[in-house]
Length: 336
Image (cartoon, rainbow, N blue to C red; front, side):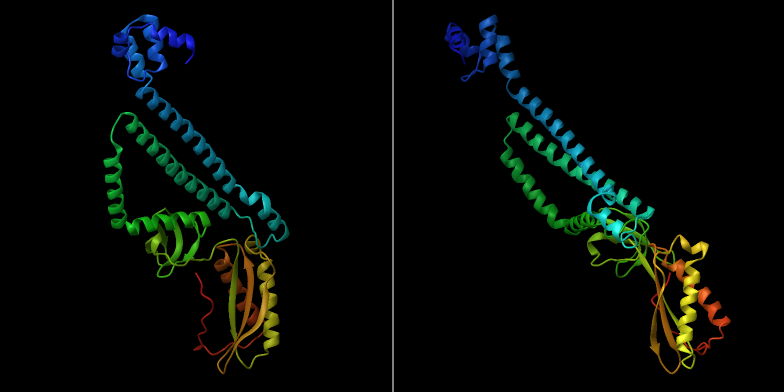
């Protein structure tokens, strides 16, 4: 306070000063009492520059901070959504396009994942900011926050013990989204259930198996995930022929049939690298199996495998390659 202001304030009688302002008067109270000599106006000025001003500043600061944080979260989500088009991943995709394949499904999943993460982060940040703002406002109003915080702590501990599984589900869901373990439309194996993912939330994953059964699996109970639809897939077939057949010729016919399948118009959009005949996979008194495989787009391996089976069957029949007995059943790598 300047010397002139202190001199003006000292001109007010002690009774008037004590009646108008508190023991530690603010500048507003001093200014009003000197200019108007009104106790009521001075009291109003002293009150307005006290708790109401603090509350207003806290609320305004919380609103501004919340807006800035939400904008930062939106930019972060935009970077996640567009990360497949820039930086190191883009350079890797240019060098190995068959591995880091860009597909519409992957892009849609990335966009959905970014939006979900952004919504979660916005909610968490807003809750933390406005929670602290509420505490400051209650403190500015003169409330004793000690018992309130103690009670909230006890309630939080009780809620934590009672909702451990729920908290575990939410934390697992957040990490699943961050790590992009799977998304809507992926075919996954999560242990007791497997099928196509229909819904992913922070608490539960919903998927539908081959029989049409809908499974609701809490995220906290998912210990491991096998994703059959991410980045790229592989069609793998074990073709059985008679053990007395010309195996080299059979492998040649199978390879030619696989290449013909890769050139079909209804398969070109889903296949990537050229198919490969790995050779003899099983040899026994009842049959010999030759393994053939090829890389496909994610989720397309089952359709390509069906096309490949038909093409190979026709090629083996045309080449008069002897097949195993009808009672021989050889399990392959699974189908859908």
